[in-house]
Image (cartoon, rainbow, N blue to C red):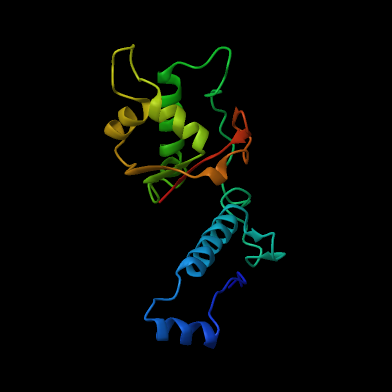
Length: 178
């Protein structure tokens, strides 16, 4: 359990004023606290730490720095400005990432979700898989042909956190999980 240290509330005077005026209490404070919680949870999932509070989640680590997470893939440089890889090479990288957990666990755990750094997500969701004129993107082709992956989502917290594909904001990660 990690204390996020975020809360909101109203004074008795504010509640009485709202009641007398027949006006609801502002939801602005609640939205700000909820957003703070979401950011903190993202930070905990990514690193296992809450830097703003100096806390750790019992030393478990997060998706991006857990010693038990396999990270030894060498990917094509998807965001290369010079010699960018062909769409089939990026597709093959996605297949390798998505099937590796099943191979590693002899079928016990098959990834069904990929979390992708937002810069990489933009690349796969906007690059045509085939010659120009085709509306099939790398992402749509991958989703239509992957037997296990049901969702590919972007998570901006993966930008600049890995040691694989480099882009304008640094190295990025892709996480496959069930």
